[in-house]
Image (cartoon, rainbow, N blue to C red; front, side):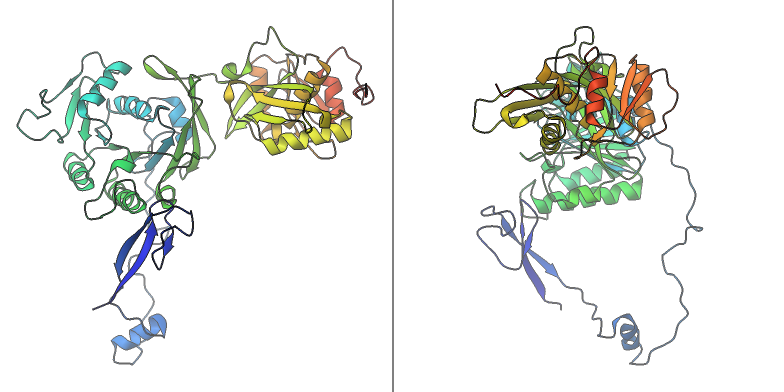
Length: 508
């Protein structure tokens, strides 16, 4: 009989160790290593590898056999069945999924507590239940709590959970049996359960088209001794659900908790197992929410969908550019408009800058929604190539609405906003700025220029300051190509004869 092998695995980071330590060598967490026992395979493969194994099976005499596949297939043998995506009822979600829900796929949705993950999935379940059978597994709420939340969201006018007030079903079974919510959808069932074996039995009995697991950190496999939410539990439960999803062609929508750093809690293998990873993010003090694609086997990554949290739940934002532009009729000094691209979606965003003399030995730099390292580089370029003494000035840059715009195409907008704040001038509100700023003060070309210009023209902008050297399509917008940052400053701030000498600050 093969000898069992003992090793230790960390509940926090998933690192393996051949011996027990009070402190995890990888993440430094105390008392997080748990013992795991595995039994090695009973198949003894000789030193000769596969050929030696065949020889051992035939009394030491190798037998020449023609090569033929046992289970593998060629591409010609694989059927060309076209996969029809399902519309979720929300165009923003369909966008980030690549065009709709793929049958048999696993989608992981992570986000901060209270951001609206359960709200989004309950609303999506209600829409899908009009055409498909849905099983909503709630590991954090009872059936009555799910019903109250559905009533608050207004997904149905008349709600009734099959069961009495004591939590027992009408036929005397336990309340862990699926409870059908009438009026919400044609086939929407709620199962308050955390036992993985009970969940799999219900999936096998109900055979839903879509199963929602809220959340994977609450589900546990009784055969494992570790606590729910540990690395072993999350890994084994996700693997079991994935096997069912692929074998039975059931779409799995899984909610995942996040750590204080913002990453999805549990082992990294959790993100490798699923087909799509979505992050639901946003400022809890703001009403809008961003659904961002991090991984997608069926579409493009870094797509975003934008929702707004209202009284009756989440509502789609059809034109997100209007949310991040600000008031164009009353422009303020130190603002500039850029066109950022999130995946294949162009969004016009207002950047705000504030420059003031510092009262500290070293100036302060702060950026909200922009990349801090690129901000520091742009400040250095303005001091070296344009002549603004940024080493004596505090600099603050923020994007309107809290949207994170960290791509190089917004560099020119950051630079112009800083110069406008320094000179206390107003940038033409009918102008958008697109371009990457190089360390030599040049304006470099960026990708997806056609999409950016088309979005700017659709919103009524009259001019676009863009990098020189590219060919641009003929939209209803004036194109101003520039090659240097100083040229962009002169073009962006109208009615001012600005040169590099004019921008030098008097030492007094």
